[in-house]
Length: 67
Image 1 (cartoon, helix red, strand yellow):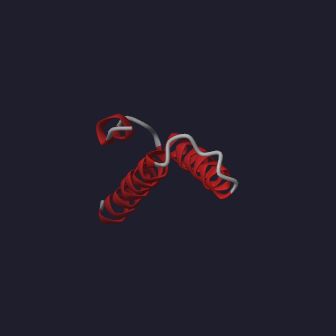
Image 2 (spheres, rainbow, N blue to C red):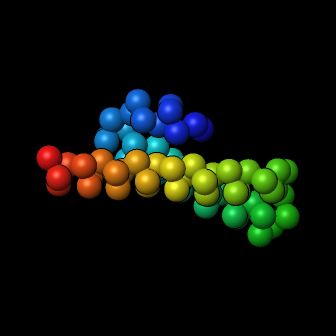
């Protein structure tokens, strides 16, 4: 998911997206542990998406305090 797409989401939508991505990461790690993972590069993509969402949340938090 691109950062420009994430910037259009509200805070509650970002929270929901973060929860969804964390669940997906858990499932991918579980699949990897039992050797059923088809695309191992998906783990790193999901981790980067989580970082993007958390960065946008932190940016909103900081800009809210300074306003």
